[in-house]
Image (cartoon, helix red, strand yellow):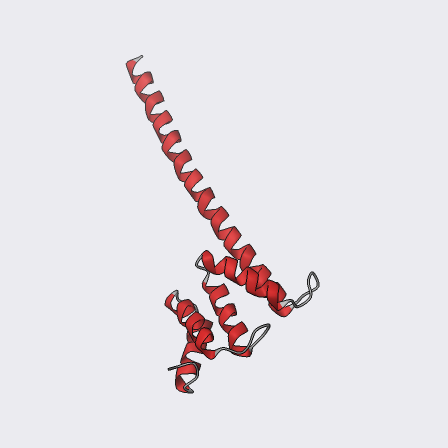
Length: 125
C-alpha cells in the first residue's frame, strides 16, 4: 500500500507541474497571438485589403498597440509610415528611430532600412 501511495503522489506531482507548464505556455501563446493580431491590423490599415480600406490613423493606432508589446514587425511598419510620410508628415528622424528599434530586435527589413538610411545620410543627425 505504501508503494501505491508513493506512485499516486508522484503521478499527482507530475500532473501539477505539467499543468503549470501548460498554463504558462497558454499565456505565452495568447500574448503571441495578441501581438500578431495587433500587427496584422496595423498592416491591414496601412496597405488596405478586402476587409478594410487604407486608413493611416488606424494604422498608427494599431502599430502603437503592437509596439507596446515589443513587436519588431510593427516597429518596422511604424518606420515605414514615417519614412514615406503616410498619414503624417515625413519624419526621417522618427523613421530612423523605429527602424533602429526593430533592428535591435533582429528584424531583417528594419536592419536593411537602417543600413539604407545610414548609407544615404537619411535621418542621421
